[in-house]
Amino acid sequence: MRRFALRLVIIPTFGRLMTAMTPSNGTPSKLRKLRPWLITAAVFAAVVGLSMWLHKTSSAPEPQAGGGRGARGAAMAGRGPGGAGGTAITVSVAPVAKGDLPVHYHALGTVTAYNTVNVRARVSGQLVKVPFQEGQQVKAGDVLAVIDPRPFQAALDQAVGTLQQNQAQLKNAQIDLARYKGLYAEDSIAKQTLDTQEALVRQYEGTLRTNQGQVDDARLNLEFTQVRAPIAGRVGLRQVDVGNLVTSGDTTPLVVITQVKPISVVFSLPQQQLGTVARQLAGPQPVPVEALDRNQDLTLASGVLKTLDNQIDTTTGTVKLKAAFENADQKLFPNQFVNVRLLAETLHSVLTVPANAVQRGNDGTYVYLADDQGKAKRQLVELGTSENERVVITKGLQAGQRVVVEGTDRLRDGTRLKIVASDEQARAAASEEGEAASPKPFGSGSPVQDGGKSE
Image (cartoon, rainbow, N blue to C red; front, side, top):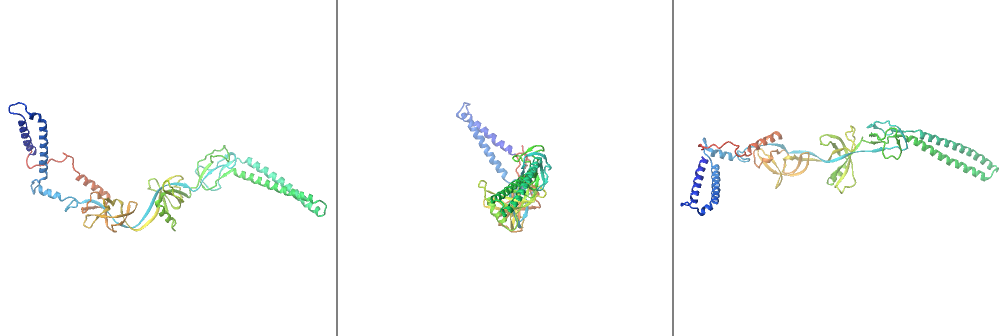
């Protein structure tokens, strides 16, 4: 019927317009020059009139059997959120909890061995034996390599022979000195002879001391042919093979030993957090530190904070800290990157809510409360420290109140709530409600049913 009425309006209008534009005598007129502009204006006026007419007819209540469309429109108008008899919004809630909240500081750290030793030869010679296994745990004093000892044994024997020779000379000189003292007492020799013999004895004693040092040096070099581990730890890969000539000046070590039990982790924290950490470190209780894997899902080791650096890095504004770990199971490896979680402090008897319950607006932060009537109430709050997806509420809430954690984007003050048990159910319901409330594309809906038949 609407299309038919539109046709009755537009066609006579165009007919009258064309008749007016043609003179009765059939000769051209000035109106013919204005024909395009007049046609455009007429079409535009028809479109505007049609739009106004359609808008008026669509907004007016249409009669319907059993009460008419006006009654149904009135009922639909009262179904908005927050209105009397409005549609309930599906949400999930969580209680405002009161209790202790541990506050952690997070950082990226590097595992560092307590001691790292580059084992090198202290004497020169041919490497004849490497008794350790790569990756082996060794104790302090274990033999790691053996250098050919024969040249050093010969040097030791030579030094011992020289020592024994000089010992015999010293003994003979001491006997002569005792004899000269008796003769001098009998006034049988000159004093000069006695003094010369005493000087000879002292000379032999000095030579004997030198010989003893040479013997000790040769014996020490012989001991250095057995390269021993200076510390307990884990040996790395062998750097020099058997048969090579090694010297005390080699830059390449025979092997590297790292002490991994215990082990340390070095990490940095912003200078703003230095006061809290220093206060906890000076307290009577140790400061717990955890080393986590890359995804922060697995705790590799637990230890304590040992110390912090004596100055702040002016380039980054951070300070370095060192934590110690027993590392009995050797899950921490030198130069490994780990995530560090340090227990900075524990807040006692504070109110906390889930972080996703907090919303932000022009007037500040707020949450939606679920009241006893099952309606949403907008409540301004003041926030404190956040930790592990929970936020401390310093003002605005009380313990036991329920806050909306899922479905807050469609809430208004006074909206009716339909509370479900889990966040997953609330998200699924919100998705379904969003699809139902979203406008459909033009032409995808069912045609409008009129009271009469359309042409």
